Length: 242
Length: 242
DNA sequence: TAGTGGTCTAGACCACACG
DNA sequence: GTGTGGTCTAGACCACTAC
Image (tube, rainbow over all chains, first blue to last red; front, side):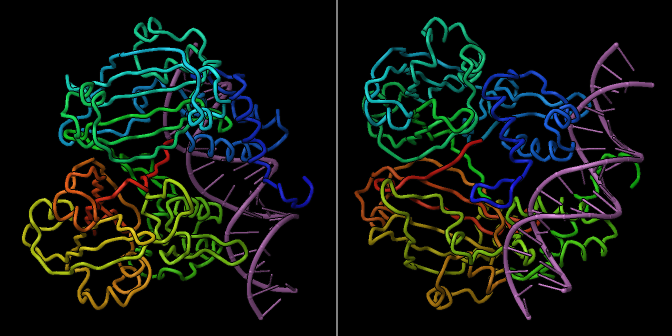
């Protein structure tokens, strides 16, 4: 606790960093309870209030979930609300509904340089490529092209994917130990090419949203690049600014 | 401090509500300092910690800005960083630059029912309509169509707009006392019609982002509806998910 | 030096879940 | 009842700003 160095950070942030390390190392698994605040306080030799402030930030960032009277739990993609937490697509009218996923292709490949760059790999490193369609009420709406580092997803194949029910991120965290924490998206408008048009059942040239997403796990390590093409005739992408 | 009623809220939230009321009533103007935490604590008869927790949330929501050693200030759209706080458009490569605004039209009109609905007006109530273009480095990129309740923006005309330098929201808060706090956006892809194509200097049919925004002031009162058409050949809309 | 926000502590009590 | 997180308090000290 020396005086302010260029890298000074308050105690509660140091505690937070330790907690994130433990989470990233898998010391506590998704869905499991974390030790209570008083226990962590005594473990780290700080007051409960300091642990609480660290935990406040972790809860804000959706790394943990607190349940009054029960404890604090490692966040999961399993929960109802979070099944499609990262999909910002909503119907223009009517109730939101869960999409069906239609798997189109799974293959191994070598990372081209642009994908290698965003995934922090070397060009030519192995990746897994998943192509799939999200279907809302019978209507194909999202055409996804997903790239993952092969090293983290050994054994991921069509059988695994089709056997799984729920979101991809649920599968990734339960079967491959990789939990997606946050993501950045870049959105453009483009005209459907032949592949997209036939998959989404629209005329070639139809304007689509092109959503490029990089998803990160603990410690801001990028572990997924995905390009999604969205039909927006009956749906829209929703965002809140503050 | 009665026991938990259906509308129970902790003390610090009650304090927060009082503070938001004062902000909304204009008791402290944008840019001005708010009374210190100890003063507010004694005013409301609570501890400094409780005021602090209320203020924490207000700072998170960008309603106030805290400066260590100086005080807490009502947030403003003036600050460098926030000049285009609500514009999520970034160049595909190169440094972000501030856009120039080119005013196309200002007029008074009657609110059609759809706009009346989102602005919480009655159909036929007076509105102000602004059409403008945002130009980045000489390239027209955003075509905005903005609707405001006339009752809140008396005297807003072309002269006022052209005389003003800085963002629209800076003008709204400094000249009309309406501060935009947050906004919701809905994004679609569509093909440029003739008006958009000529304004944005692209061929008719070019895919564009269509960004519908509703902006809110204190107390979640909607005070602006805006439809923006974005060229995304050299820019993209950026978003962070967590 | 005085005043502000920022951190940390210790302890009290409340609300909730579970046995 | 016991243990958990949630709130509230009071007081100490630190870091920054202004005079």
